[in-house]
Length: 415
Image (cartoon, rainbow, N blue to C red):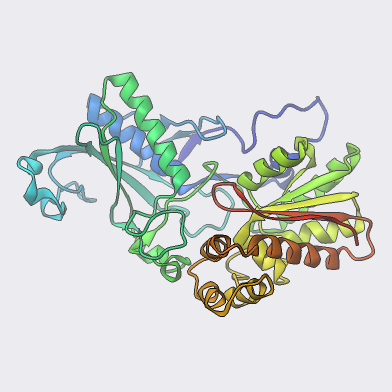
């Protein structure tokens, strides 16, 4: 588990006695404890394992650097140095499990290092809380950099529409970059090449994944390694809704006339880049769009920007105010109807209805010149204005993809 670390959004300065706004202020006011993503845990395990592969010693605790600069420390729950195949819970390497072992002379004698970290999700009711995330590191071929493999309990992508190509381990782009950065740091410190094979596994991950959307999305064999900040912010409880209200109160007290409700850190960055908003004007709404809208109806601010991932905001467009995957789903039939309104022919509409994800749907439409992203943004704005009816709040909407690229906009419109 994490031994120590900076709070989410740490680094923002406030005056003594002042109430902080933004993501850090909301977390503090909620009284909830943040946790760490599977991506952060996998990064910590990889850093420890690669250090041991080069030096023979496992750092414990191991400190990593998160995308926003925080430096949490993680205690190791498992460690092993050996040769041959995949390490097992009892410490016995299984050389026969290496798919390429028979093809490479000396493969059975290859050294490896394995380290494991238990995920602590804080106060978020995350199905992966308590899971043991392992990283097994071996030397790679010269010039190959970091090669990722899915070990037991980590899924493989089998359908299009996800941020990774078909056939790749379900280790998302930001965790991959965090792991690459950690490998480079260790290589520089201990004279390594940085050419490694990193196999991430999760004990009982295939069983845990049955409680997620992975099988339906075509991620088979286990869990995804996720996270954009390394930090799990506990949204799924009434305390977080209360923290949203406190965030609105702080913004109003500071005289802000424009606030942004964002579904996560990536959309928050986009809202800041587009509108130049200060931290205390940022509302980390997570999945609780309804909480933001209902509170602003009673405590209005002249302008609200809603910024979020295309899939989440397509749910708002369809009339859902709770955007959590357990309580609302992307309606691809609805997206197909929007695409028809935007000029899609029957073939494209059918492709949208059959898309694996909302991201795939918007990509299909963009390629055909159909502005599905704008249509979703406009419909989401209409839903928001319906909730705000009678309150003097103008709304604009920004839809983004996973990389933070804007894929849809709806300009400000009043009630």
